[in-house]
Length: 251
Image (cartoon, rainbow, N blue to C red; front, side, top):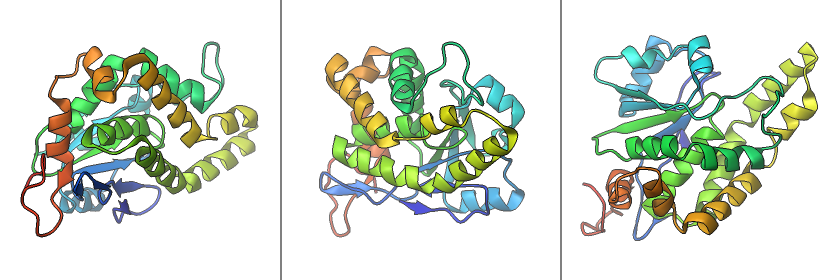
């Protein structure tokens, strides 16, 4: 995973580089990030140079209304918003109290949305899709983890990727925590919702395996097409250099 060169506060990373089944997750196919402020024209140009052709926005109506995603209006880009939850700024009745509860709740309550999101990610295209929520760790992490699992990564590899992604957003989380402190907000709630992202994903994947068997079975149960694993391999994997026969890879 490597960063796309954008100025702060933007964080976008190319997910490519992970070895899988005789090939690897290709660079320039899957980007992940957060979104807290609009991109400048220069930012958009850099994303296009990285092959950007599609954007998947996982934010709620409330979040999207506060900070509009200008990429939705960019010519030649396919934009899709599939709301999955909402990044709350304070504890409210019925809200989750930890990331473990949040991840499990997303899987149990938003299966159809997750199936739509992953299907969009692995849609055939000759370029990259950017997946983002607000921070770029939790909702984005779930969708990316499901897509990488379909492409052939093991649970351990998926968790290792999630750990690296959580590290990349740590400075953003630290700045946001300082803002909460300055405003007198509930730091206990903030810390609970920003700790243990990897164990939370591990628990979510274990729940999925217990309840559905495989990621593909979970997504199919919520409306995804039956050939999603094949689509994921074709969309996200590449051949190692000198090998032209790896299954599911594109030239």
